[in-house]
Image 1: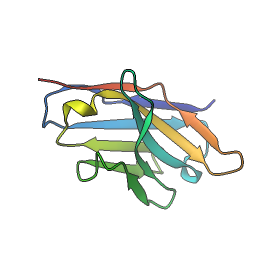
Image 2: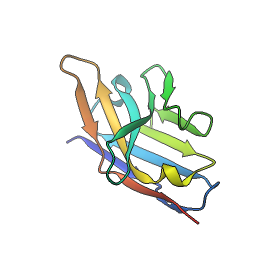
Image 3: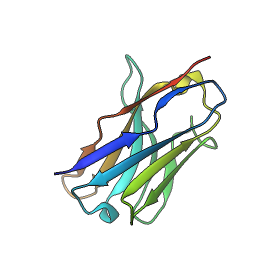
Length: 118
């Protein structure tokens, strides 16, 4: 069955760094665009970053220059390097796999908590 398993979340001080990883299984990873989304308490889930099959990336304005998304098709993993973290980055981060067919196919991980606090 399809699985997206996130890891790497935790508590970090402002200005610190974390690296999130997502291990995928149960689908043809290389065919899917991959992404990271986040949801803070009381807020809607929002896009953080995406990476296409070909490696093209898109970032939310709020994380540009601080976060980097990457993928390894052989290992079936997608990562999010987060630097210069701010308290407003605190949220549950979700891994997403998307296939652009009609209707699109979306898979989600269970989420990992990131807390930025002193």
